[in-house]
Image 1 (spheres, rainbow, N blue to C red):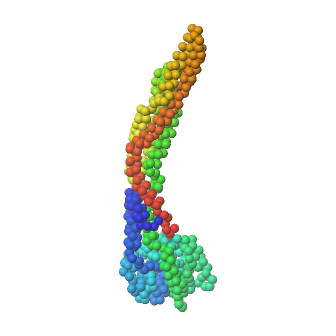
Image 2 (image 1 turned 90 degrees about the vertical axis):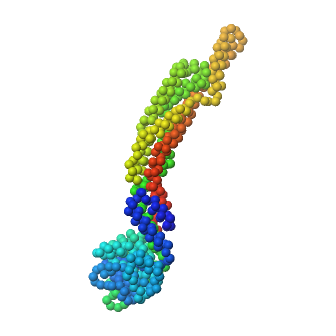
Image 3 (image 1 turned 60 degrees about the vertical axis):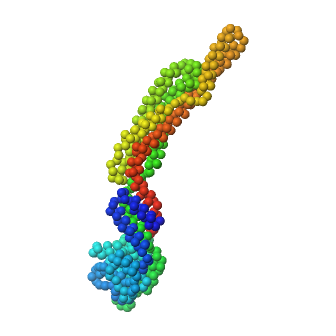
Length: 497
């Protein structure tokens, strides 16, 4: 993605997250790119670059056919950029040269349909000269890299080009001063230079040339000119796209690593809710919960039969219910201070600390707020924890009374010699036994269902409480970083890498 809106989104989102000096630099690059994109087309800018003594100016003179650039033995010779321009250069191109800081211009003889710029050496002993070259290189449409047989492995210029024009987009490589080589040496050095350039990403051949041989005419000048024309026509490098991408790269490199690791609050909230739900698996509370359900079922669903069976097996129903409720309450109190609960709270606190670090804000003390959200959720859910309510309990409760009555009535009838007494007693005993077994079982099942509803209510309540007590602060802290990470993710990789 190379459009300006995507770059603007990245640069705008970096405010408050990235070093302001970096943001300002990126914004200047973006503004420069947009000015250039909005202007009418200018003539292609062809920059001639190379190290000290590579013969750049001599090659420029050879291309022009007359001496327009100063040459000499004193290094560096070129201290200010010089532009060879057409005689009728348009105002847009002239303004672009002004923006590039190229004041020296020669139009006699007139240049072809492009502007040739002789730049200071990339390895100049004068740092300001090298900075001028580095300013123009990424803003030129085509770069002619001039090197020579002595220093063809020009590491300094290679580093500058690789950094400012990734994959050497729109670069023409010239092996100058081939007149100093003999026979097969030309091909050997040209192949070595080509391999060196290929390692930097260049696709294309190395052009042998000699801009100012001691004897005879310049060598390879027409080939260089054709290569420049081809590179201009191919438009394989777009300075505007490169400036935009460079602005994004500046922001990406300066973005704190933590900004790419933060998560949106809904994700943190969902994970916390799941963790809270897992905490409520009835381990410590299981025994008390089952006892409560059994006693409630015996009393509410078993009638006399259930009460008698519970008294025989577990003691009085009311005492068992009271004891189970006390045990369950203690279990819930212990759960709120359980190490797993503390772990959930600590995870939230660490998330807040990481978020606060992105904005240089002190991490908020959220321990009490987290504890309060959990406690409120447990309290609200506990008020609705009810193990009663099976729809068929009134029916079994009635049978729990009918069964014992039938049992005693049948026994009395049998003792009095009333026909059918034994059958009535047997039916009463069967009903009593079934109810005595069914009522506690159904109570335990009802308790399990009630606990599941309770656990869900606690998870939902804790999630809601955390949203109001923690979530807003969290989102305020990580919001800028999330916006920047999203903007960077939406930006494709550098167009020239």
